[in-house]
Image: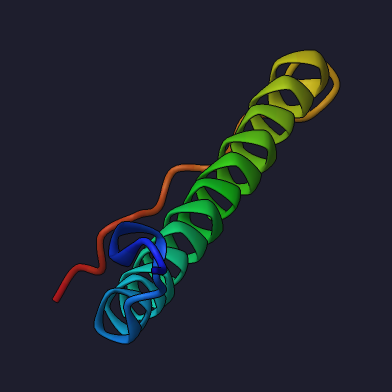
Length: 69
């Protein structure tokens, strides 16, 4: 007689496949968002560093004048 506890359950297999699909999508979205935020932070850090080191070489920005009527 075969042991019924080690027999494959098709419903459990379908449920696990669906759960794996959903969790895989959620994981990929989280990783993509983390990469976007990381790239934005690196870009902003590079911009601030460049601005800090080149601020002495550039002329200060001109003030904009209000138009008089």
